[in-house]
Image: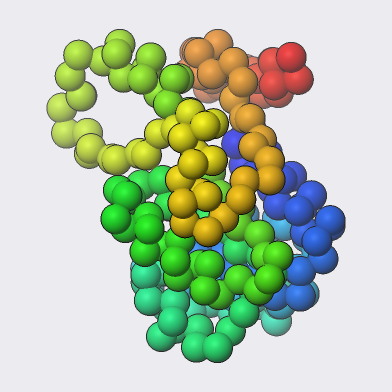
Length: 208
C-alpha cells in the first residue's frame, strides 16, 4: 500500500510540475497506477497481456478515464511499430524495467528515448543494491516452487552512470521503504490482525 501511494504521489508531483500534453505508460497491468493518477490529458498504455488489457479497460471506464487513455496491445520493445511518429512528454513504468538484464534494458531505454520529446521525463522504480544484497544474504535457498525473478540492483552512483550512458540524466531519486527491515516485519506480522495500526506505523516510519 505504501509503495502504491508513493508511486502515485511522485507521478502526480511530476505531472503537476511538467503539465505533459501526452503521457506513455509501459506495462500498466490492470491500470493500477493510472486510475489513481490525476492531471493526464491524453495517455497511451502499452501492455502485452490480453487479460491485463481487458482488466485495465474496465477499470479505466469505471473511473471515467476511458476517453483519456488508449490501451494498445503489444510489446514495449516494439514502440516504433506500435507508436509510429508519436512523441510524449512523460513516460513511466513500474515493476517492469528492473526485471530485464542489461541488453534488454538498453533496448527499452532506446525505444523510450526515441518517443520522448525534448526535455521529456522518464519515471520508474529501481532496487537498492545494498538493501537487496543484505536480504539475499539471509536466504540460503529459495522456497520450493518459488519462481526466480531477476531484479537489476543499483547504488545511486551506478544508476546515474547507467542513465547517462543511455541518454538520460537523473533529476531526482525518491527513497521509499526507508526502514525496510522493520516495515516489512510489521507488515508480515500484523497486517492480517490489525491492518489499520500496521498501516499507520509503516507510514509513520517513512517520515523518519
